[in-house]
Image (cartoon, rainbow, N blue to C red; front, side, top):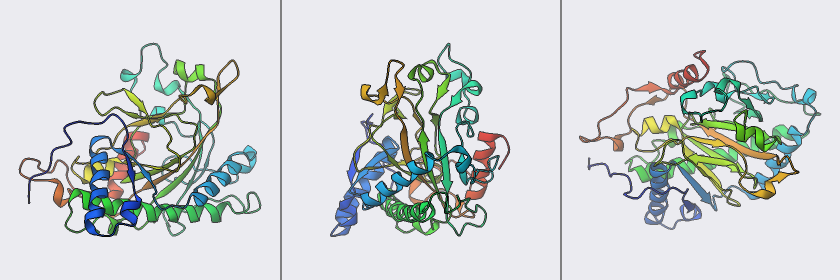
Length: 352
């Protein structure tokens, strides 16, 4: 095995944009290798990358945004016909604002600015709906009755599997970019049946509440899985941690038609920290026209998030291309199931 390449000498503080059509329509392996290395370099230095021309139909993305907005606009009593169960064991169904407290589960009061409330006192301003594979017996879906919102189930499941196709292509590209001799090594463990689609809505909130720290849209956190696909509207507010300066956050400005891809903690461990899982958050939108009235009430923000993970019994151990004499394996092997339990235990304190 050759020695592992060091990260790029110059670490960018912006998210690279990669044209994924050159992977999809690449005429030969050399063309695809160029794209694979671009994506891998982004995932090493920043942990995030924008993919344009990614092959997922914009009509399908728009259709999913539309029905997501319709769902969140339903009366609360209708949304609560598909309630997310309490606790962290079953991530399906609807969660009302304040149900999920990322501020508490990722509490780090020492890093919060002086004068701001402790993490446990922060009001979180978002609502969500979680969807998985219909064949995942351990995490069965919790659906609204069809007559409450006709077409919701069909539309979101179609989007779920379209995202799986894109995620599979990205994992294939990363396998090639990392230098795995077996290009299908990552994709063979990601069947799509243990992924999660999250529909998100950030309702309007006074900007002053977020600025004072008494309210949050999504506090700083890292994702647990392999990779995440994100489709965001034009409102803005997503920020990533500067890879050079801890606790400094930089805007991930929406790019029309692009899918944002980021590395999760599991793939970072799997790659022996070769790829980077970067903390990120959602805060106030950056542009003046994202606020309304003298109290600067924020606009609604919507996003579609697709969390990707391997089969539950997959053994997560250092990938062959990610260790050498100078970079020995840092972590003991662990199954995805054990890894998830470990993460949820740290986040929620219940070991589930």
